Image 1 (cartoon, rainbow, N blue to C red):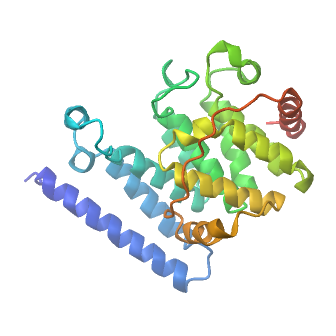
Image 2: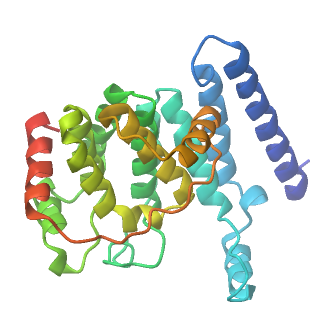
Image 3: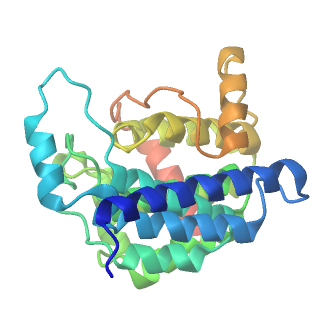
Length: 285
């Protein structure tokens, strides 16, 4: 007999809670930082599977109707599909499964014109936002090796636009296009491979991509990742009021509330941009 969808959804959520508790036990009592890699992989698989199950996230029609019925002043409900996929790539990153992340990203559509428009109000394309989330997680836990492999594989196997085209667009803010995620993470990687002297370049890069980061799901967590990266690679110390919250988020790898990036694109500094491009070219993708 076919299981009732509501019951299947309930059991899926219970299974997720069980896996999260098992991972916490592994983190607290095991000898692997952030928990056993295998537990992260199992939880990631389950989160991604849930994100594709209408018994958990509802049908497309149900979600559209729910969104249409909301009042303007009502706080928007979290998109469960996106949240589960963010959680999935986070745990795949912690499991050191960059190739699995690539496989999942291949299944997602390329950005639409609306998602690539400068100043877009909609969230960025899932595919590109999940890439950025995964790279930030890997850099935050000091796994440059897998972060580099992930970005290189994305360029090779997924991104259809040329690197030169995206570099030109990143420099030319008159073209009406938002800065691309793959170019941002590529430059970020190369800067992190340098030394603490490139701290101003890191600060500029994150600030100028801030509007795009601010449109991502769980932007407060994205902020805490960039804060951790700044501290680890460039000795940029966060304000004391932020330190405790950041460490709590990193310990949980999924909590915290640091506020959005905000700030917009800011003024384009040609020298900073050229230095970032040169840093990326120096590393070679």
